[in-house]
Length: 170
Image 1: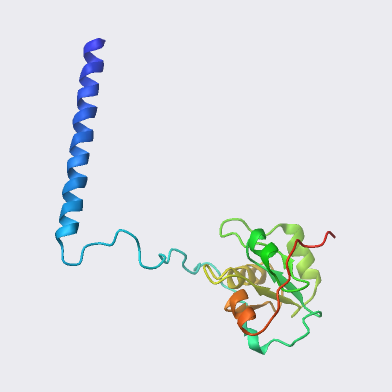
Image 2 (image 1 turned 90 degrees about the vertical axis):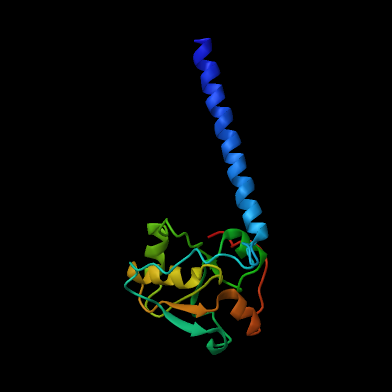
């Protein structure tokens, strides 16, 4: 048994040495190339792509085209709860978009009950969470869903004030 362990350790050691040599050669070649690969990406990778399965799209609206009083709309913040707490539109409700999980059935039923053309969704620009959640709500049967093109950043640039804090308890 001792002989088997020694042989396995020898194979493991040679594998580690071979991998180390391969890494060193790769790094050396990269350093010698005129335009070698960067150590750190210059900009974030575009890893999120629009979902081809979404057949119903919500309508975009520019932040500057929104009326000043949004109290007649049910405003939905599709960003994470942490982002919501650090700043959201007054009266907005937090319903974070998740690329894998659908919104809770109870929340969808409540949003459907608001009626057609009453939902306005905004999110972030990293994954366009507002557009994606609005499309998901449209797919779920909510009628006339609109989303803010450019998300919360566009709202702030259009002069909208954000408030801090948690969502009030129902």
